Length: 420
Image (cartoon, rainbow, N blue to C red):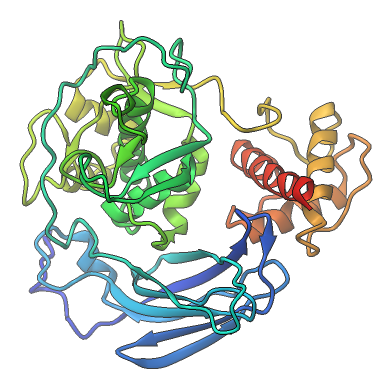
């Protein structure tokens, strides 16, 4: 078998990646219509887009290095291209984003939450996306015990069993840097951000699943054990790779990663005899060696060989690890009870119809439904439109990913309605 290296791939063989925008305000409760987006490379504008009534744009094709550069660990060619973006509309602070990362054969999603401005000429907010952790130089993780001593309850979380939190509070720096900013980030958005920062979206789906499960277990261990709150801190986790995981507020994510996170976000890794999610530490496995931790590049090789996510995890964390699922998801009105599709009749269908109707008040592209508990063609149309707007596979089926995304947006729009 021919092993590809950066020397065997033609550096002038350009790939194509896609970029799509979602522009919102008020914690996604309101889409921003007619926002103007400019895309630049090397100070040259190459694209200009305008958002629709759902705050979205069509995908644009952008040049980037060949996909193969992201599939080899010794590449001397940066495997992604970087673009700058400007987002502006009257009444809001303009946003400038530097370093949006485009990988070949993937769809990058750049979401921007705009802040309203009272000034005629508002100051520009700048977001700088650092190099990807597999390419740039970042501090190595300081090893910690895999199983933590559980603290007494503080009232911040329920400690009887792991719970999916509504928000993660991310401290953007060293744990002891009091000047670093704290960001309140929705749990799934946090996981998508970290995974998009830590692995390449071009990797095999089972490799992505294994790495996402490690990221989620790591995060839920911090939540469950109240690791930083037990030390008197006011946050859940840091963005420092020396202590935790890479996170950059406002960076682009990848659709290929987003879909997998939505699919498995309630799961985590654990071992027999422990209540807590496994503190699943990992490293790149190329520049850093980490016995008994997951190797990111090693997991990519195992994915290439056809291993599933659990067998990849057991290769690194041991044969007795298994997946468990959190029974409770915080911040949602009603828990998911099973897939809904055309022909379904139930109270759950009535719940979805009610929530989609409330969402359509702010997202008029979503057709309104008769709330009758019958999943007919009109309900399917509403579900498919919702899925299109919020980057979910357009199946017309309300699975777990769609149910919880509808719940998220419903909570956001109803909170906003209460404030008006």
